[in-house]
Length: 521
Ligand code: NAD
Image: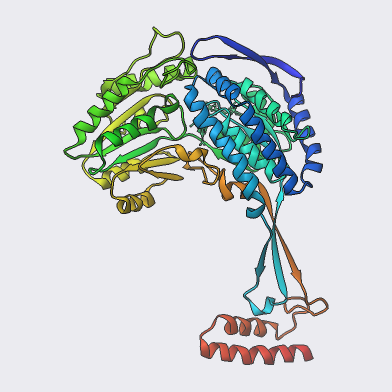
C-alpha cells in the first residue's frame, strides 16, 4: 500500500468496542500514486495469456483455503457477523469465484465472428473481441467486506485489468488483508492495490484516471460517486441499497416459510442489501399461525459476539446505524404499528445490539416500509389479494431483489415476471449473491450494471468490433461519386431487400439498370 498519508482511521470491533487496529487515511497524492502504479502494471498484465492469469487465480484459491480460518475470524471481529456467516457469506463466494472465473472467463470472452445478412455487404466479416479496459477502481462497503471486493477483483484481474480497491473505513484491516492475499498468491506488484481511507479517499479515487469504477454502497453514496466520475466521464457500475419484499401466498407451508423469512430478514443482522425488509402476506386461514411461528423463531435467536459459539445475530455496525433503526421502529410504533417481538436496543450487551424485531399493522406511510432499514427489523403487512401484494412490492424506489413463497411454482414464475427487481427468489432469499455464475444487480435506486456471471464480465471489458472486407480493390456502392442515378439504385436496393415479391422483382430490375447506367455516367 502507498504510505503517503494524511491521517489514520481506527477499526473497532462492533461487538465489544475493542480497538482492533489503525490504517492510513490516504490523501489525493497517495491515491494518484496507487492508480499510476496500477496503470504501469496494466502494461504487462493485459498481455498475459489467460492460462497465466488462470494459474495465479488458482494460486489465490489455495492461499484463501490456507488462511480461511484467519480471514473468517478477522471478518467476524471487524464487522461483527457470526463466524458461520463469515464462512458461508464471505469465503464460499470468493473461493467459488476463483474456480468459476478461472474456468470460464476465456471461454466466455472468446472472439465472436459475425456474418452479414445484407448481400451488398457479403464481402465483409466482423470480429467482436473483448479487451481489458485498464485500471478498475473498486469502492466497497462494510457489510460483506470480503466477498464483495474479492469477487469483483477476481473478475477484473481475470479479464486483464488491474485494480485499486478502496474498502470501507469501517473495515480497513480486511482491505489490507486482501492486498496481502493477492501478493502471497504471486500477483505482480500493482495488479491489486488497496488504498485505505474514508469517503474523502474514495472521492480522490473517483477523480483519478480510471477506466471503470465499480461502487457498492448506499444510494446516496452512489449518486455522489456518479456525479464525481462524470467529471472525467469515467463509466460506473453501481450496486446500491434495497428494500426487498417477500410475497407470501396462501398455500405457503407455515413453519418452513417462517424459517425462511426469519433467516432472510435477520442474517447478517439485517445488514444485507438483499435482506427481506418487508413482508406481504396474502390473507388466509394460516396468517396468524405464520406470524406467531415467525415470532417464536425470532425470540429464540441468540444475540452476541460473532466469534462466540451459538451466536445467531451479531451487532449492528455502529451507533449511527443503531440510531437509524431505532428511529424507524419508534416512528412506526408512534404511527400505530404493533411490535410483535423485539423493538429495542440491548444496553445490557457491550456493543451495538438491537433485538430482532417483527412489526405488524404497518403501511407505506411509514419509513420502515419505504426506506432501507439495514437492521434486524421485519415489518409484516397482511393484504387481501395477490395483485395487491405485487402492487405494494413494486411500490418502492428500490428494485434489488424480491422473494415469493408458495408451492405453486408456475404461478410464482408469473408473479416473478411482474416484479420490478434484478433478482427474484422463489422459496428462498439472498443466497445468489455468492454464486459467481449468476448475475447480480438492481433496478431503480438499487443501481445499474451487473456483476458476476458472463454479464458481469462484459461490464469489465471493451467490446471491440473489427470489420474486414475481403473485396479489396472494388469500389463500394456507397462511396463517391454519387452521380444522378444513385438515389434510384438506393431505392431499388431497398425494394430488392425488403419489398414484397413484386417489389423485389421491380427492385432487381431497377437495381441492375441503374447500376449499369451509373457505371456509364
Ligand atoms: P456507503 O455508501 O456509506 O459507503 C460505501 C463505500 O463508499 C465506502 O467505502 C465509503 O467510504 C465510500 N464512499 C461513500 N461516499 C463516497 C463518495 N462520495 N465518494 C467516494 N466514496 C464514497 O455504504 P455502506 O454503509 O458502507 O454500505 C451499506 C450500503 O451498501 C447499503 O445501502 C447496502 O444496501 C448497500 N449494499 C449494496 C449491495 C449490492 O450488491 N447492491 C451490496 C452490499 C451493500
